[in-house]
Length: 195
Image (cartoon, rainbow, N blue to C red; front, top):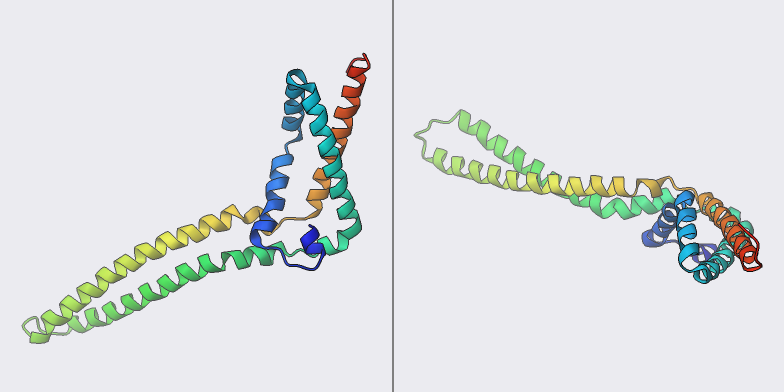
């Protein structure tokens, strides 16, 4: 966040970290279960982790509070579109090549339809047409693979395309409350109280 606040644009990988963080911490019931399990295994480790989480979440909340307007200007859609450009360009380029080969082979095929089979040019044109069709089939397969890669990447990053940075603050608030509760409960346990 600090990089963007200071006026720099985010790379796709940097923007992606927001979605990864959101997805990693959105399942608070699972986090609570993990904390309870760790409490039984190593309560001091849990306490230390909770203190780190408290500090990290407070820092995130403060950054968001201080720079909410600036952070709301992160254009995740543009970042995603720029990331997708090479995928899009690759399949379109091969598709154009395949279409050109198809048009050329179709033109020769139409010409062959009106030629006499015994015409000396027929065999040469027929071979040329076959070669063009074979090249077309190769390009078509390549196009289909590149288009599938483009669609897969489009689907993979869909969550980032419409991501709202305010979700990071919401997660930070949740984690902050969890950390406070863990610390408070452990302090009570250490003082001889019960959870």
